[in-house]
Image (cartoon, rainbow, N blue to C red):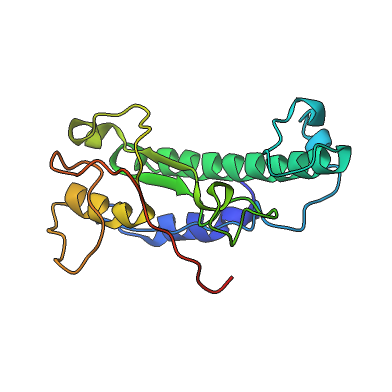
Length: 188
C-alpha cells in the first residue's frame, strides 16, 4: 500500500479497534487537471466511450473523457487498497464503506451545474457481513440524496435521528419513495 494511505494506516494502528470509528478518505482523483493521454495509457479506448449528448463528438473530447475515466479507475484502486487494510486489521466485516462523489464530472454542463451530468453522482455502500442482516443488498434505481447517508448510518448504529436532521434512512421501511429531489447551486 503506497504512502498516499499512510494517514489511514496510522489511524488504524492508533485507533482502539473495539470502538466505533469514522474515517473520511478524500482523494484528488478525479479532478482536473488530468495527465494528457492517461486514459489511453490505462487501456481505455476513446472510440468506445459513450459521449454525453451535450458534448461534441470529437477526438479531443473523447480523449479528455478517457483521461477522466483513468482517474476514476485510480480512485477505485485507492479505495480497494483501503479495503485491504481494513481486511488485514479484521475490521472489514463490521465496517460500512461508503463511496460517492460530491458533484458530477469536471466538464462543462457538469460540475457546478444543475443539469443531470452535474447532479447525478455515484453511490456504492459496502455493509460488511456483520451488518447485512439489516440490509437487503442489491442495486437500487430509486432516487436518493446524499442527505440520506447520515440518517442511514445513525440507524445502523442504533442512534435516533435528531428531528432537525433532513433525509431518511435508506434502510427505513417507512421511507417515502421520491418522485423528485431538489438541488441548488451554491458557491460554484
